[in-house]
Image (cartoon, rainbow, N blue to C red; front, side, top):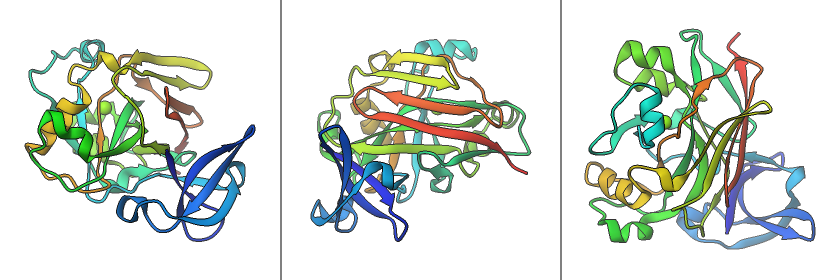
Length: 259
Ligand code: MG
């Protein structure tokens, strides 16, 4: 099932994406499916006629894994970590598909990082590796936008990863998907810049969720970004960046200057 958050001009709501012939339809549901399950209102919209929003607003945090693909660790001159390397992005950095990534004044080297995003469905801690499927609601596409110059300057990642608009998520949550070996690509304009498979992750999704929950409680709606493959690089105002994951879809955003 594909769950989207959208607006048809009024209050944002949630819906299920359905196909009707060649047309895609969004069937509105009551409330937030993370808390209320899926109950249809009976309202249906053409997908083209609504604006999609970030499919989830993380309840408390976005937990990220750094250096989780060998080739990406190498391209930035880093060793592969022995354990997942964790950092946080604030939930205020989240934007939706089509929303602008705002280039901050403080940086002159803002990079895209296409990533598989895990959406948590239940409050959980100390989840064993073989039970992590029980706490995962679904998957979406993420872009861990990073001010690379500030990341190097600060050592700590908070500023470099935490600007408003630095966490695009979408276009929707896919709830039924085996994510162990999916193609992931990032295009900048018409140029493909990242191309890998999720099977190349050093730490797979169950290992990551078990590790994160051994450190901190995750809440429904929290998001875990699983790391980016090789090919990261700079974006400029005016650029369009598109991250695509097989079985989920494409997350498109445009970079705009601050002023
Ligand atoms: Mg990243």
